[in-house]
Length: 543
Image 1 (tube, rainbow, N blue to C red):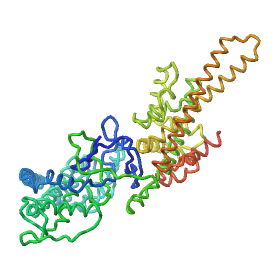
Image 2: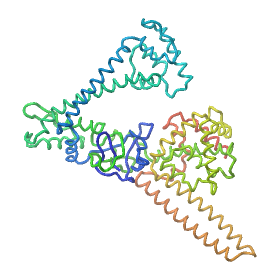
Image 3: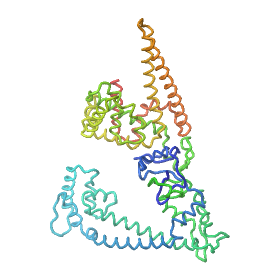
């Protein structure tokens, strides 16, 4: 796969098993994972996910700049000029629609009248009248249970002042689509300023790049830009000013600005940008390579990124805390209300799969053959569907809370939904090796249980005067098969443990005591999951 960032892609195909450094969803932290976990079914798991990248060979970057940027392409420059004119015309059209909102608080208040309040006449509203409108609107929105509705303060400030940031406008847009015009106007304004700035840079850089005749300190125009790219990659700032035919042109500065436009981030030795897509070979051969992570707690990361790096061992422990909390809740739910199938506690993974979207992490950690109810697929489907329904309507949280002896406040529907949501966010990012090790250990435990059962039958057969020699032989053969399977699983586990240690710096022995990290996990993810400390305490007492 090739990864696209902004307007460019990686130079080479990124192997699925290569280690990359990415953002932890919902936080400002970074961690290491496998590149193949960034997508599922040829779609990014998290569009816009931060990733640490580097620029490839300076000459390759310069060549791509020439292909991508308009200073060598009159056609692209003309396209920019046409887009600038189009955006300016669109702004003028929208300006006529939004101008009344900028001059009158009455017009602004009218945008909310579908949700309550009254506006009489064309006179400016007093503060008291505005407050009455705000109260009516807020009460109506509360009744509708709208997701992330605008706050009272946001509505009040907009009606009074006519100003709001884009986050506020996005919320207000749920109240009245007309607010979308204000967002569009602001976006067009930024685009116009950006294109004007780019065209100004183009006119300067054309003097360098348009021909090979203009020599600069013995270098042609392309070589000057190669030097600028090399300086950006090394983190060194060279003498910026180059005299071309009299005027001084800021080659380094403009090259840096153009690279920033292409990748959507400030370029440097290593830099943080955002993934936009998985692309095919036709869009590859770009200018980027993923940062080559080395396992020793991210020590080869630059200082400004190292401070944000979350070691894989810590991330794995926190993810296991989330998984352990959810497992305890589902076990309590099973004991309280899911009695259709005897031994259902051994199939808790079936319920977890039903609450999570299908992805590699879920399929690896809870494989079908380990969580299914043997020979009863219809029953398994019925139990899973009922679990989803009870999760959505709040019955699951209530049953589990009562079984664990917790109050509704200690284990609420909102808390359970947040826990599942967090699991959905973090599971795909944690290196798959962690799940492979967990599944291998589970299979080993299952195989060892089969071994113990088989040994019991063998001993019983030996002590029986009616022992069937053929049956005894079958048991011995079965015992040998289970022994080989166990030994193979032990070896597979050791291999994965070595990989985690060598490539991610993980000591798997410390992960066994993940429950000691509950408070650390709550601190990392926030008190929104603080209720899980009660879940672990209650589950421990029940055990």
